[in-house]
Amino acid sequence: MKLSLAIVALALAVPAASYAQDSTAVSTGEYPNTFSSGSANVSPFTNSSKRFNDWSISAGVGVPFVQSADLTSIKNGNGKNLFGYSAYVSIDKAITHAFGLKLQYDRGETRQGWFNTKDAAPANASAYQQVGARTQYDAISLLGDINLSNLLRRVDNHSPFRWALHGYAGIGTLAYRAFQKDENGQRLVTEVKPFKFGSMFAQAGAGLKYKVNRRIDIEGRVMYAITGDDEFDGGGNAYSDINRREEQVSDNFFNATLGVSLKLGKHESHLMWHDPLQEIYYKLDVLANKNQDIEVCKKGDADNDGVCDDWDRQLDTPAGARVDGAGVALDTDLDGVIDLYDKCVTVPGPVENNGCPTTTTGPVKEEERTLEGIEFDLNSDRILPSNTPILNNAVNYINSSTGSYNVIGATDTRASDAYNQRLSERRANNVKDYLIKNGVEAGKLNAIGRGEKDLKYPECEPATKCPEWKNRANRRVYFEAK
Image (cartoon, rainbow, N blue to C red; front, side, top):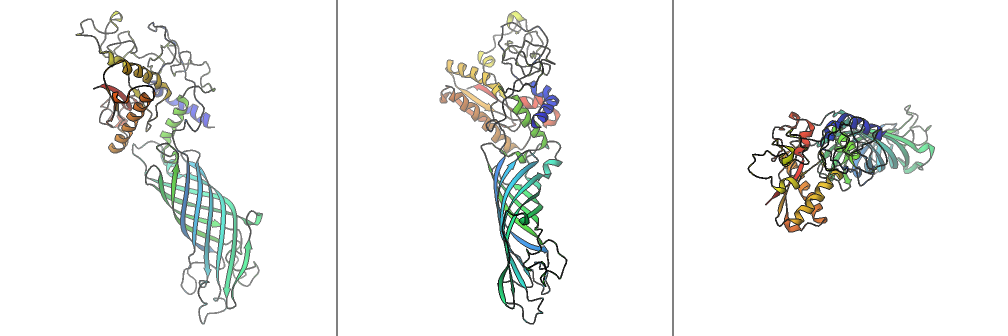
C-alpha cells in the first residue's frame, strides 16, 4: 500500500522532482543530440533512510471519576465529589503522518459512593447513604491514535505546527480490586484478574498536544473507559442490594490526564508533526535514493537521469548533467551547449568556444565551473545520494587548490526566519563534515548559514509565487572562495 501511494505521488510530482536530478550515466564526452527518456532506481525503506522519527514514549498523571454506575463519583446526595488518581505510560509508534498505535499501561484508583472510604460514614445518614467504595485498577490496552489535525490539513501553510488534536480508541485487559465500606467497616467485595475474557474493556477519547520542541510534547487528554462489568464500582455482586437499585450493565469512568511525550530518534522532526504535503515529499525522498531492487519504470532508465524511458526525450544524457521534466539536459542560455559543458552558462556562445561569446573579456574562473552547489529537500539537511558526485568533485578541486572556501547554506522562504537560519547552518555544516570526512583539510573550510536571506531566485517571496523547481534551487549549499 505504501509503495502504491508513493508511485502515485511520484507520477504527480515527477516534473518538479526531476528538474533537480543528476545523471549518473557514463558520458561519451559528446554533446547529446538524441531524444528519449529515464528513471532512477530506488533504495529500500530502512531506518537509515527515513527522514522522520516515528517512535516515542509517553507518561502522565490524572484524575479518574466514575460516571455511569450504581455508586458514582460526581454529586452524591451529600453534595461531595470523590476523585481518585491515575497514571499511565505508553510506547508509541507512528505509522503515517495521521495514524499511529500506542501500547499503554494504566494504573489508578477511583473513589465513589456516598463518602470517601478513608473517612467515617456521615452521621444520621440512611443505610443506603452509608456506603462508600474505592477501586484499584491496572489496565493494558492497545490504542489507535488518529492525528485529526493532519487529516484536516490538505496543504502546507508554510509555518511550523505547534498544536495538534488527537483521537484515541482501543481495547485491552482490566484487572481491579473493589473495596466497600459501610457501618460494618471496609472489605474487599470484588477482585478480577487480568487476561481473562471477562476482564476485557474498551476506552476512547481525545487529546490536545503542544509541541514544545523537537523532543518534547505535552498533552491534555480525556478518556472514557467502558468496563463491561457491573461490579467495578464496589457495589458487590450484580444482584446485591446496591447493584439492584439501578439497571447498570457496565460501570464506566472518565479519566482526565496531563502527560508528556519524548520523541525518539536522530532526525529533526517526528512524522506526526508533518502535514500531508510534506508526507508526499517524504515518499518522493524514499523513491529518489538508489540501489533498490524495485523498478518504478516499465522500460527502465537508460541514462539514469531520474526520468523514465517511457517519457524521456533524451536517452543519452551525460553523467552529471541536470535535466528538465522531459529528461532533456538543461541549456540555460539556449546556445546549443548544455550547462554541464558550458563555461558561460547564462551568456550564449559558440560550441567551439565552450559556450562563451568570442568577445568575452576573459575566461570563466575555473572554480565557478568546478565547484558546483547541491540542493536539498524541503525541511531537510540530509545530503542526497544524487549529490555525492558533485561533492566528490569539490573534494578533488579543493585539495588541488591552495585557497580556502566558504561553505554557504541557504533555504527557501517557508517557515520563520529563525528556523530557516538554523536549517541553513545545519545544511552548511553537513556538507562541510562530508568534505572533511572525504579528505579535505578542515582549515580550508568555513560553514556559513544565510537562511532565506540568500535566495537564488529572489522573486520566490513568498514561495507560493514560484514553481517548486525554483524553491528547490533556493534550498541549497554552494561554495565561495575566500
